[in-house]
Image 1: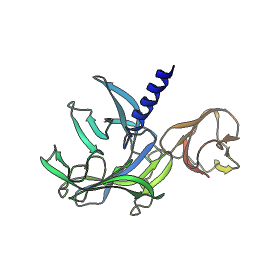
Image 2: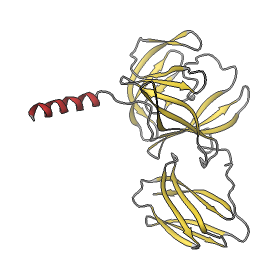
Image 3: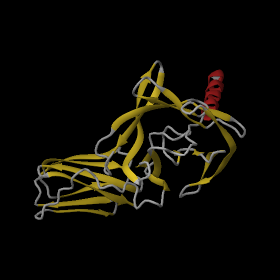
Image 4: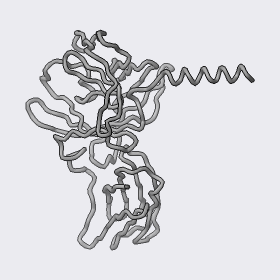
Length: 284
């Protein structure tokens, strides 16, 4: 028994020595796509959710949504993070894989950019405050101005990680970054985390009254003039994770307990006979 305890303790130490830096299912990004010589031309959400195993390697699925309410997620790539903090992205076409981040680098190291065949040089590495909460995070600074930040990655977006050159075409720009449904980073240049009007139609006929009122840990719904027989209500957190699901039986008022869920922004979707009602509310 004593030997078992010692081995278990050593295993715990080994696990603690391999922290993750980027690939978390609790993270959510919103990006603006910037056109050549133009402003933003599109917006999207990005998250990791679900596993795919290829040749014995477990990848996290990279999912994108293109409307503010995250009505549909689309698989766009696969990510893998090894035990020392190197992050690889695998494209869905051509069986192509490339290094996206390397959080194991030290000052003075150089990394070969496989896309442009030149090197990035590490100027400095620090553990310093970042974000709205000033949490201490590992940050890596390169000679060309790139900065990698533990958790959120690169402020320029997920596909410009090695591009020190002036962009000649489209590029990405990070707008917001969430962890565990809490806003960590916000680009103040944008009016909201997803400025584009949602593609999900919010059905509000003149004879319909629909209200969502947070109170005392309960979310009170009122839908007068709406046929709610067999209507399906879903509540999701900002990462798109389902936190409540309910089938209605014609009631016009009902409450959903949210007191056990952490503060933050939540999304409701009500699929009824008249269409889809969707919106957001905040739990304090």
